[in-house]
Image (cartoon, rainbow, N blue to C red; front, side, top):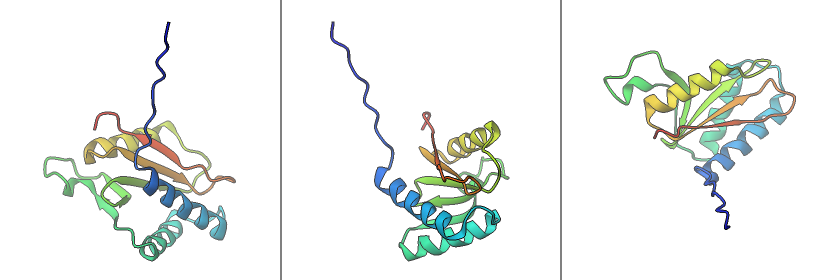
Length: 131
């Protein structure tokens, strides 16, 4: 009997690798105890330095007039990846569900939740399997 091993395809590996490097650099420079706004400002600066196209505090209803207002994301990078910044003790189930909602509304495949409060930075990849 032959077993077929499923292949796992990474979504946007080069871009997400570049973003993760930026997040680690910020975490190493600023540390754990700043506010989300400080991290977002530093992320924006490094996105500009790395010539990445992005939208900050983007209202997802701009993508489709039928979408409900109120879904505002921290960043949309290269019109491919949603980045949600956190600065709290731990990521909750609600944070995951929020990202899934963002991805579905935006019809995007990948979202990253980055919690800068953790001692060791571990960006979470959330995949929209319905896109």
